[in-house]
Amino acid sequence: MTDIDGKASENRDEERHRAKMAKRKAVQDAEVASKTVEKGLLIVNTGPGKGKTTAAFGLALRMLGYGKRVGVVQFIKGKWHTGEKDAFAAFGDRVVWHAMGEGFTWETQDLKRDIAAAEAAWAKALELIADPSISLVVLDELNIALRYDYLDLDKVVAALKARREGLHVVVTGRNAKPALVEAADLVTEMGVTKHHFSGGVKAQQGIEF
Image (spheres, rainbow, N blue to C red):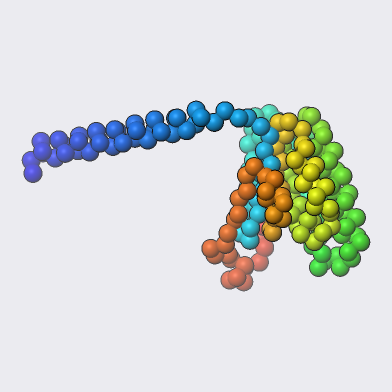
């Protein structure tokens, strides 16, 4: 094949690719244009995989990038010192952070205490949900509190469905209840393909906390 033939073949490939991408763009543009609803979302990050809270804080960072305010309530991890809490502190009063859990139930071994902590955290969550200056509320590990029946599921779901217009809420934690999944606008199930814990690697600073 001469250089001329090779160049012609290359040009044809580029033209085919350009035509293919133009068709793809037309389809994508039409799909985007068909979406006209703008609303506050109820988002649930669940499943056995790692990254549920991390994804929620990624959304929080995105919201902060647009000058919005964010509220966080941690239902379980209150006693843990986490790097993300320190990082978000740099945003000052644009982030309202309440770490109100006392650890997992096998750590406290006190059902009444766990229920009281969950109820206090939920009361704080309702305050943030009602605050018109906050655009995103992260309810970290709320699914765990619901799983162990520390809170009334029906009341929680009803309050989340009745949230003020335009407010985004992200709920994290394994084993999301079916009623919450049904009420949500977006549900992501994080799976596990491979996890370093199974290889004996302990929780590490900057990765797990």
